[in-house]
Length: 200
Image (cartoon, rainbow, N blue to C red; front, top):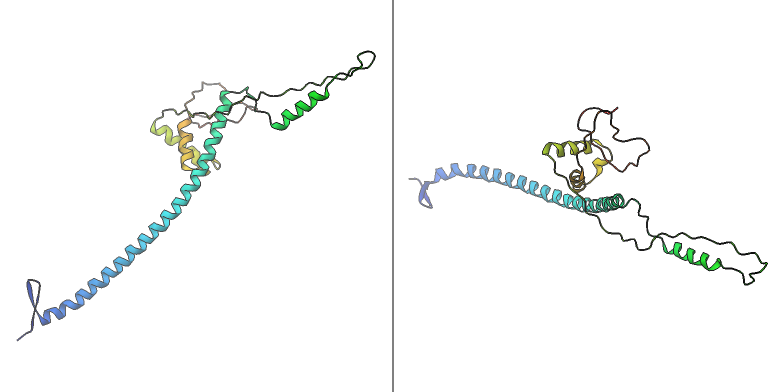
């Protein structure tokens, strides 16, 4: 007569349970290994998330710097003849020179003092933030610009947000055969991405 054991709604013989024990132990071992593997993956993801958060913070600072430069460049392009505001030292120097440029009390034979002219820039210049203009493009055109940026040793160091802003602000320019696109001596304040054909 065999000893019987009831587990739930099923009844097992003792020798059947003895056969099941190694199988259950093996299943538990596999589950433990899978659990440790998943735990290691989760810890790796947590570490990567922490690294990405640090990169996002750094990229955000770089994006703010680039946005400030682009705003200044757009403002300079909108008002090319507008000079910068004078510093307080310039104003003080002008006042001192004007006080010294006086005539002597004796207006007869005495030689008059030389006049001193002072030119000061306007002080009512307002530094207004400029709004960057975006231009519609096809998906292929955007990808072409991004590929060109990645091939440039300087531009590929930009943050992802900066590259997106750069792509959105670029516009199409068509050149005829024999037309000058850029000449030596011109200000290098434009970025060109060649779509096709060659320049000579």
